[in-house]
Image 1 (cartoon, rainbow, N blue to C red):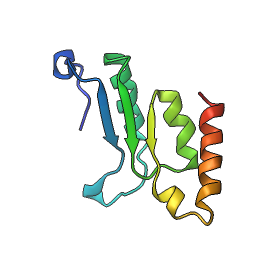
Image 2: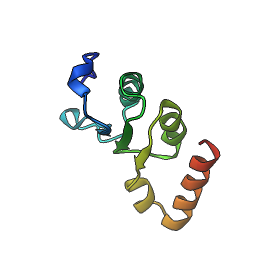
Image 3: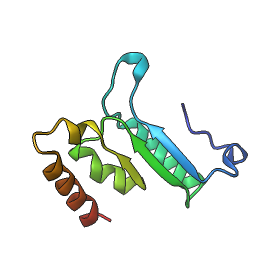
Image 4: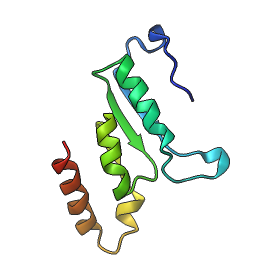
Length: 99
């Protein structure tokens, strides 16, 4: 769904949950085009809380933070890893070093 520049469409919203995959095309992986939506939302509502969900792996953390994402839903990258606790520690380190 495109982000429109019609500010009145978003008035009153302070939280956005963006699911960054394309189920219609069976692309259940991170889609970098969602970061353009984050940038557009930041321009419209600078103080909004933005959550990204779906297919987030280590290489997506920094670009997501840099575009202004507040929350990352990271499931499969953790639960499919050989050591979920170590993966969580590694991801947290990346996040806190880039805040």
